[in-house]
Length: 119
Image 1 (cartoon, helix red, strand yellow):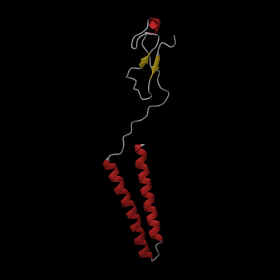
Image 2: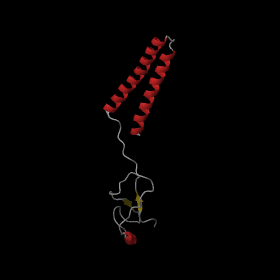
Image 3: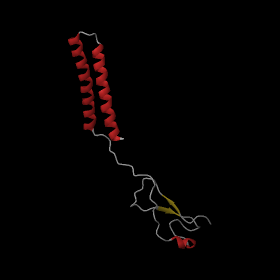
Image 4: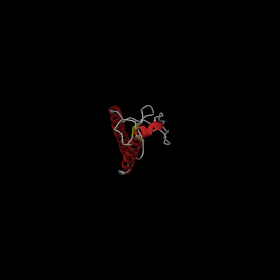
């Protein structure tokens, strides 16, 4: 006649929710057939070997606005410092490009740190 009981369980089911069971032994759907009377014992759940996935929420609107303002300030500060040093030391746009590069680098580091908190 086949298998009396098959337990289907998704990976995200919580331990407090009951397991879903289906059976097919020639009876109507939802009834325990007489040949499966020995299987009427309570079902036990086997714990998953995988660690639980932490619940991380998406960044809020304020987090994203702060990220944009911080990135703009970092790039602007690097560019401004480069321009000031170029005018003070009478160098060509070398320090402006170095300041711009450092500002972009700081902006990328801040963005990566913010994104990692949300992943």
